[in-house]
Length: 97
Image 1 (cartoon, rainbow, N blue to C red):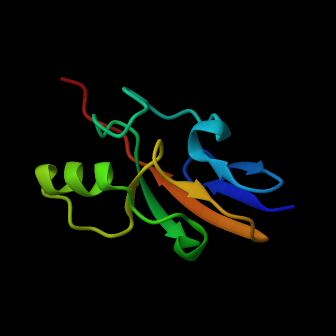
Image 2 (cartoon, rainbow, N blue to C red):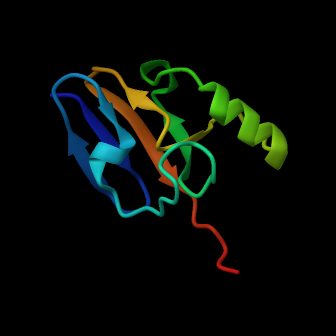
């Protein structure tokens, strides 16, 4: 079965078809869950080819934030397609203000 791995927590989530990172329920911060706040940023360590392309919301937000790293994604916006080891992610911890 395909799986998604969260490296920092060493958590692996298996799925059958297509899954969003919201469905994985990894212990990460989420705010709006609609691609507007950026709290759920993750870094894709492997498997970029198994992840849907960046949404217009991601592109707009990353431009506003000055994020040019193509491996950074919003967990609420990307979906992972079926593959033996679909993707590996590193969750970003946001500074608390």
